[in-house]
Length: 289
Image (cartoon, rainbow, N blue to C red; front, side, top):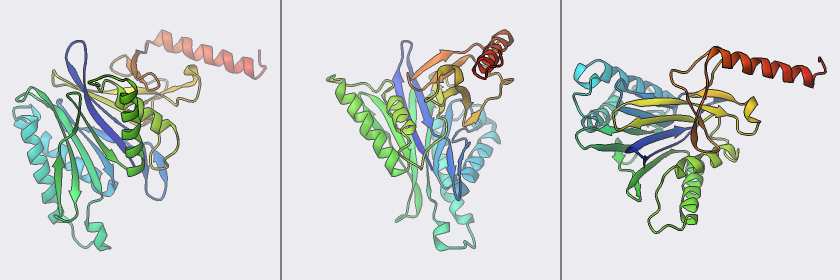
């Protein structure tokens, strides 16, 4: 299942939008390998999901295909706030294509989305939580919560979501500020809940994506797992562990325990030095030298 949080925060040069999720898929098994934050075919927005992948993956594929198929959508001529309206309409239209469900409940979407990006027209970040309303039998959107002038939204399983909201509130109250700012508090709370291993519904490495005011996005690698020495951690990107020969297209890697981005040297010389150091350590530990 899932835990996703999206929030905005100020920086020294402006503001930015962060989106984080876990990597666990379930359904007869646990698989800590599933991408949950997706681009939609344009650089100024992302969508993240929680819930049944039998619904979410096909719907996200349709959204991406829709945006990529039309130049005005793809090239950001149409503002993301208007794209969101079209996406919501598409999600509801999709319900009419369900036929012959094995059980009546299989015709009811068990999923939710966070649709987020930067609106050039509004000159601000745009965040919406989209979920299915069972009584009205349609997808509906809600606005994010507001903390100190910034936005935050959650989707996912009730247990980890409530624990993350509760921990985030505790951290903000402990700061004793009259007007608390979110900053990286959602990331801190997210990490504590994910790494606690209290909830079977979430797991795997965190996934981290940012959207900027210059209407571009970036997925970041993450050092993981947190319970081993730094030298033994690996880099995970969107739930998948990078292999030694793989190099990210930018040098910044997220360190979840400190909620900071760290410069990582992907140069061949540095990778050879790390490999040699680890080989020497292994040889010493096993008594080979």
